[in-house]
Length: 126
Image (cartoon, rainbow, N blue to C red; front, side, top):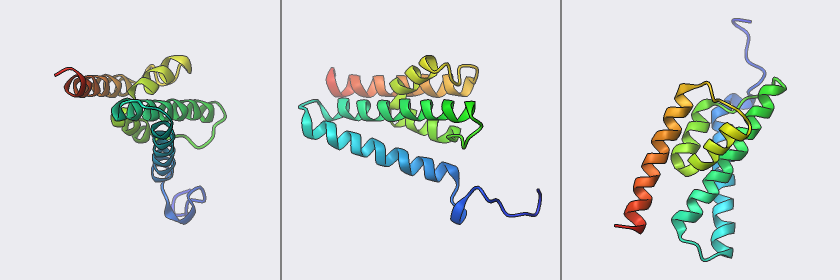
């Protein structure tokens, strides 16, 4: 109701902030774990860590959508894709059949794919 305080956000924290922080921690932990246990190029590890994180968050959002739970904000999903999680975004979109009708997701995933393809080209083949 208008004029009443929201009961869904403890201590004024927005869902985007909470989900974003959890995603950053998860991606960082995955990066460190893979880096410590492989001899992969750091950029490949970066893409793998953010890809897995993005895939998990797409799956979480789909699950929450099916059960009318707290949704992962779109800006968090877009941010994860732009950080390097575009492969997880594409996989999540098609494996969970989630966000396929949203043109903004197609555009952000395409932009992120092109951005990181260019960066990979620069790092590995220039």
